[in-house]
Image 1: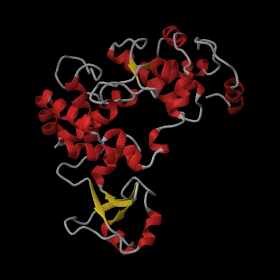
Image 2: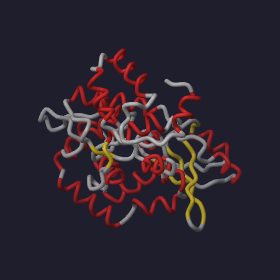
Image 3: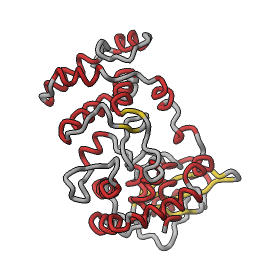
Image 4: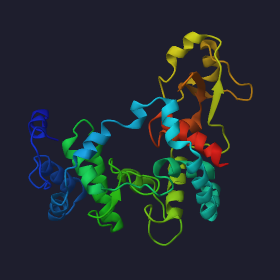
Length: 315
């Protein structure tokens, strides 16, 4: 990687559409060549075709998960229109959902809710070229080195799957298809669920459904276990510890000692403690293992709750 001083120097310039002369391209290309024996000229050709998008840099600086309260965020996803479309999507792809549920142990409503929140069941998969998104973020958004790695994964994905990186479309962050997989997730978790020889998460609902279910299974989803439970408090001071961790870290008995009333139907297990803001107050919840699994898809308690509540509405 380049020194921070060089990154700062270059970030003050106005770039054209051509990334061929960007100072971060050379070390990137050399890493790809050395680590993956990638064709150097092909890489340079692809990168030269990329365009810097200021709108991408603007969008990534203000994600909804960091700018909205729960009652505002909820209104984006828990709508009659999205619920109705989800039920239609479940019906239209009933065989794939049933098989995914049987194969991976993930409820069909959870799978559908992920796709519903991410892309409105494939209607809003993103209008940016993934190449432009990841190149812009890898080279001109140095606060997030993950995008350097994702650009690598994108080119490796293209080579492995025989895909044209110049035409693939996705979100401003480089997420692709009905389930919005970033390239590293595609390489690790996408599946050819209908057996046609392709892992097509862009146009093939069966592959997207199987891929989301596989992602959840690989990230620890436990079949038949609860997801999240609403609770009350017997010590209001525990409110100060809400939202500290997404991962369950304390046992239910520990949360009780700290001030959380535990539902009698829950067996002893680890949980995380969350506060969700209503317009007229707050609600408290204990997030269990499966709730944490949802946050592995998007590291946000707001996102995970939207997925869960949409899934319940789709039942």
